[in-house]
Structures are given as C-alpha cells and as structure tokens.
Amino acid sequence: VVQLVESGGGSVQAGGSLSLTCTASGFNFDDVNMGWYRQTPVNRCELVASMSSDGWAYYADSVKGRFTISRDNAKITVVLQMNSLKPEDTSMYYCAAPPSTARSTTDTCTAVALALGNFWGQGTQVTVSS
Image 1 (spheres, one colour):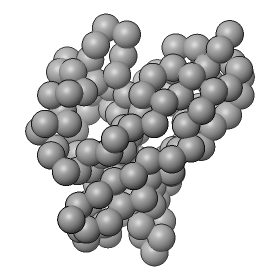
Image 2 (cartoon, rainbow, N blue to C red; image 1 turned 180 degrees about the vertical axis):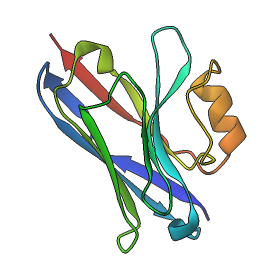
Image 3 (cartoon, rainbow, N blue to C red; image 1 turned 45 degrees about the horizontal axis):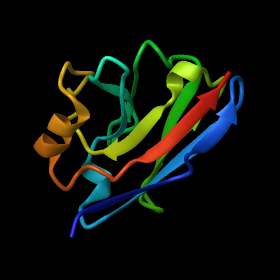
C-alpha cells in the first residue's frame, strides 16, 4: 500500500526554522519525483519544492534561498528544511509524488490530491507567528 507520512510541523516565530520529513512506503521510491505542496491564501496549490530521482531540485520563487529539499533513498525519506520562516509560510504542507514536470497550479490542493491519489500525504501544519 502506498503511504506518505509527514512529520515535523509545528509553530515557530518569524525568522525561525522547521524541518519537515516525509516517510514513504509501498512503491519504488528511488524512481519517483518527490515534492512538498502547500495551500496558498488564494486557495491554489503551490508546489513549494520537489526533487527528482536523480537529485535535481525545483523551488518556488517564494521559497528560493530559504528552503532546501533533500532525499535519502536508503531511508526512503524526503526532507524539507525551512529557514528564515515568514508568517506567509503558514499553511498545511503536504508530501506528494508529483510528475517531474509538475509546478504550482491554480487548482486547490484538494484537486491535486485527487489527481495524485495515494501519492499524497495527510499533511502537517506549519504556523509562523510575527
């Protein structure tokens, strides 16, 4: 059974850091593009960061220079290190396995989750206070 389980969310003051971990199971993790999404205040699903099976990383402009994505194929995990957090980073963060060509979309995260099926986690809340 395909499963993506997030951990590491929480509350932090602006300027602080959090690290999110996604643990995967039930599929060939080595061959799959992995990423993190979040819902924006205008209700679209933003692809925050993703990393291909060969280590190529994509970042949304809104997080470039602050967030770092990494993956450990041996541990079957993907980590999103978030530094210099801002109040506008507050959201639910979802681990997912989108196509390597995926970018942010005008769709809601509900719609993206339906499209990705089991390759979508339950989410972890990140709250950044000013």
